[in-house]
Length: 562
Image (cartoon, rainbow, N blue to C red; front, side):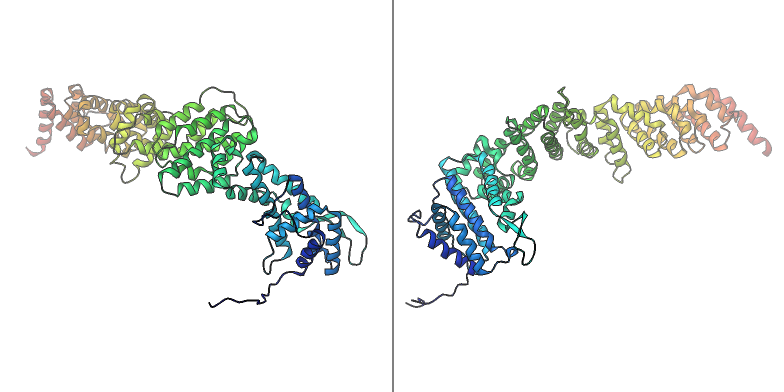
């Protein structure tokens, strides 16, 4: 056999103060009978743990660089602390040091911190497994132990070099300072739940005290289950999330606040657990809790969670779920200053979500019946989105889908769209003309009589062109009648096209006006090209009564040549 060394001295660098501490413990406590065959620390009770921690905090004080004690003075301080402690506490601490010995090169401050954590975890995990420590008491227990260590780790601060008088103000050792920080205790609580054996952890995650588990530990546990890939772990994670959400009904306000904040932190994992559609129970329990919540912080966290759920519902196309949230928030309730569900309903119906709903309504598929009910809640935002899309290059391609959506919603949107014909913003007017021409040409015709005079020539040209399309043939005669009534208000560049449409429509009531224009007797429409267009229109209308006027016009034109 090779590589085996016998009676070889191994050099380990251990701090002299730690050596003094261990030697002093051995001298005061001897070998501890409280170490079993597996060399584990066994603390009889909570009072024994506190006594041991107090002793550990007291003998830590000489290690502090701030004290500037010599090795001899530090050893004396350790002896003094040992003398004041009970024999059981000394033996328990010696057992702990035997189990958790210093590592090579480990500084005293770090070793004492590690030893303290090991003592506490050894005791609390055993108590939890025995059922003596409930989940709700885990965090308060860490806080209480922290208070013990902070109080025991205080030491007087001297006034200056050579001063023998101690100041009344107290400074804390590094151990006391560490445990005084809430963030440090929070990390230990999280670590406790992560190190809990699977059986005990599963019982808590399925039980009513799940709310007491720190969200960081819960997130890591759920993340591991979600990343497992198999169906069973993911199903288990879903059960945990729903159980956690149901704690919003807890009578303890601390529980409701912890769960409301935790649900927001867990939202990315929740989304991954339900990739298609979130369960209805999540939104239901949150909405119910918000209706009756009196604590401002909890209500604010619930509102944030509901907003997030609403966004996920819209993005994933769960429009029925989104509508259910809105309807629930709009129900009459006791409105507290910090929780106003109806105001939240308005807040979650943001412009961004309306735009997503509009885009879904324009998609090349059957129109979801919920979308018109949602979009009718804010027709202005709907029309703003349509106006924006029409200005893009692909606007013409989606115009039929826009018309389908507007016709499905009906009067509320059409009425607002008609009022936009009279606005001063050209982009809105242009969009209103296109949308009305595609969805309800009759409304555009009605608006034309009032709005034409205020439009620029390009808007007039657009309206006449849209109304003259072959798709609007059933309305051709009505359009011709309206064109005839507003002809005098039209721009000279648009009049010829309007006269063409009158001639093609068969609207015989326009013949007298056309004859007047053709004869050059009209008050304003005397342009030669307009007169030619009027003659063409009379011909298309087969207006025999205009023959005499045509003959007179021809004779007048031929007279100079005879």
